[in-house]
Length: 191
Ligand code: 5GP
Image (cartoon, rainbow, N blue to C red; front, side, top):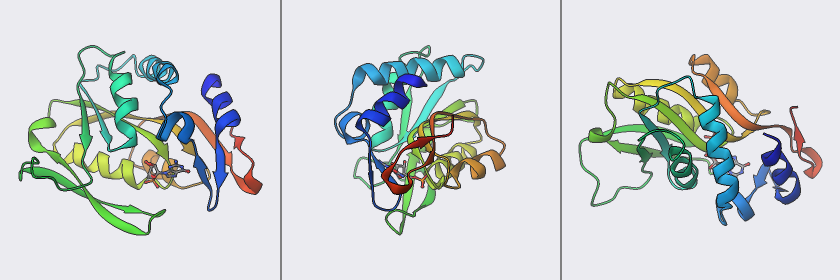
């Protein structure tokens, strides 16, 4: 997606350990017009699927998922929670996710009322790095017996193993910008 790649080149900053900082439009300040273009592009790519629900993870996935949902017909967004909360039911699907960036594991949870076996789910997230967050979401969907139509990612760091791990699960993956390298503080795209 050229518009997105242009924005990453203009505003993205490479920080230590191959991390791309995109706080000015994706992760902190949110460029809603760009989100709309992202949402339309996800809809175009998954137009052949009858999506019944979008599944994401808090916090950065929520804004993108909500705007994307507006381009599908009557599709709710469900986000997996990373933190226990008093208002979260005990009856949940739960999966363990390891964060390489933070070096810790955490649990993600979704109330069983919000994922059903009849669902055809689109998983959306901001970044794909080592793939652990998306694998956790896939696990939640599969515990519910739902079908996963595919995974939509805004920025894929293609030099990490996430892409390979998702494709190994036989799940369709659509990434709007694929980054080949962040070496020497330079952002290089796959194509
Ligand atoms: P995973 O390694 O599980 O694919 O990535 C998990 C999460 O880490 C992503 O959803 C994203 O929030 C965060 N993340 C991974 N790499 C980057 C990065 O280079 N930049 C930013 N801003 N977030 C990242």
